[in-house]
Amino acid sequence: IDPETRTLDPGQLEGLITDRTVGIIPVHLYGHPADMPAIMAVAEKHGLWVIEDCAQAHLAEIAGKTVGTFGAASTFSFYPGKNLGAMGDAGAVVTNDAALARHMAMFARHGGIKKGDHEIEGINSRLDGLQAAILNVKLPHLAEWTARRQELAELYETALAETPGLTLPHTAAGVSHAWHLYVVQSPARDALAAHLKGAGIQSSLNYPRALHQLPCYAHMGHAPEAFPVAQRLAEEGLALPIFAEMSEAQVATVAKAVRGFNG
Image 1 (cartoon, helix red, strand yellow):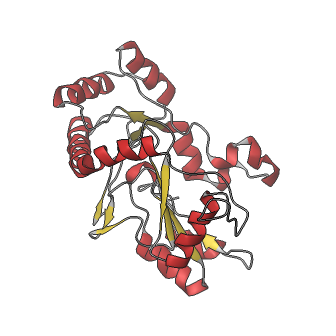
Image 2 (cartoon, rainbow, N blue to C red):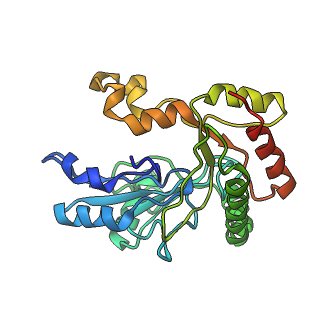
């Protein structure tokens, strides 16, 4: 991944494509868009499909074009903690391909559009009416909430600039960051988290282990140095509080505590 955007590095992508490669799944991590124009160029060159993981990137944009509109299909999470969250598990898949949309709708409904008419084998993955109703009420506020998150990120950037030992998140030129998470990096991450907890401030380790470190992928035999950026982010990343209702005073309190860390 790119060390600044923390998303898929298109410069390394083409060298990893083999005759077994069928598609690419870029993740708009933390709300920062992956470099979709470059990724799509590689995909088109090699005849690969692209599915965007937009779980954390509602309304993020690249040159005015919203994420989720580049690939063949895109996934969104509405888990309660997301920028647009339901009150339980929820999500959506979007596409502008009518045939693909119909196939996905069948797959999510036991393999058929009509009850009892199963054209394919499917699963039960339907969004229930209660979650849909909650999301329908919240959706009109999403643009305002996203703008507020962007304001809060700017406040953090100003307040934490030049803090020794702290790497702030970077926003690439021409993109609009959704700021699902505000993740800083520190070699003393665990000590910083403990310091903040002592000050009554919650932080989170969203991904304490990168994919190549997980037991389910141990059989692949990846060494830490094979994915140095992901490894470092897993070891150093710490998410500071950010939510649309957060006040400027709260940002200042968090920033003061971070600056007061002597780790």
